[in-house]
Amino acid sequence: MAKKSMIAKNEQRKVIVARYAEKRATLKKQLVDPNSTDEQREEARLGLQKLPRNASPVRVRKRDSIDGRPRGHVGAYGVSRVRFRMMAHRGELPGVTKSSW
Image (cartoon, rainbow, N blue to C red; front, side, top):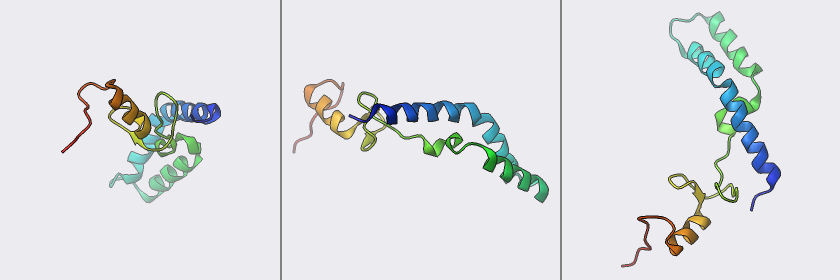
């Protein structure tokens, strides 16, 4: 079980990323545009630097949707590897069976 404060901080990061997503996308597009001048690129770079750090989607952590475990995330199911194994053994995940050969 992850600390409640870490889960809350990650949720706040998701809100900030969503808030600045459009502005960030336009600045990045201007930065890589081959038709823009050097001054425009410099302005876009400075604009990106002025955005909050948590506006970057890279800073959002994928967590277990049930208990918030930050590591071993199985993306297709939204849970950690530990919870995935428990749920698969109990038959709570449709179509998932334990392999044997």
